Image (tube, rainbow, N blue to C red; front, side, top):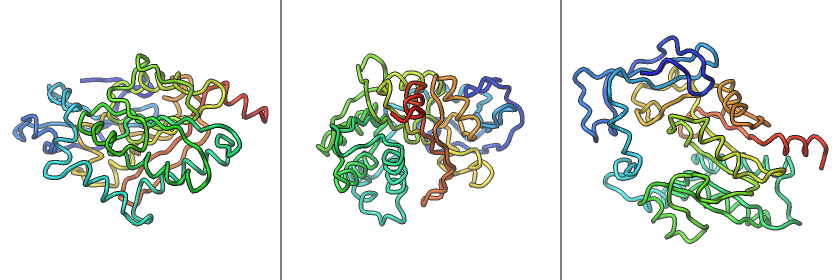
Length: 292
């Protein structure tokens, strides 16, 4: 059981939500309802929340990441989910709105140019591929050339992504050993909450950005979820380690050597409450401030 916030290193304090029964991922690994205890505990400093077990439940879930989609899409397929979500009306699609946010920022802040070469994009935790596919479609309508790479650790999801033939796919966890660098845009959509050590991952990703013209878009669940959504909500599930505040996300970025250019609370069509933040290196901030 931890007593420190992995986001800002502050002290964990009050319990903001107790979870009374195992979710489907916990049941999959044999965690029983009898004697079950799990709680979301707030940080006294940044206000973010940590998902805390009082027993060895977390260890039993450690290996499920490699078979995440086997449990999540039981009875269906990743391809079927991809087609269903891609065909959603724009008003109902979280990803369509996410693409709009990212493209608006790239164009407003001068990270995208029709006159330059392709914009290099890295999507970490590409999942079903919906975000990157919609992003590429919208870029094409704007005349933007994109060189895109999706990184995905789940073997079934990576196989599905390769079958799309829309972008290059790298199967595995994102590490420096992959040799991926010099990207104008990196995206980390609903991934960071799955990571027990978010500072380690964010610091590694910072090195994948173009040194003077790279931006990272991070989207994470908002701590308001614990107050506004039922305890059975997927966002409050056992595979998530943290719920964020704006303060917590900004502190985490700073610890990773990144500056926050913009952060917004987002109420998504699906009912999720999230924070979306654009982060960049000091060198990129200096270039923006100098009007270069």
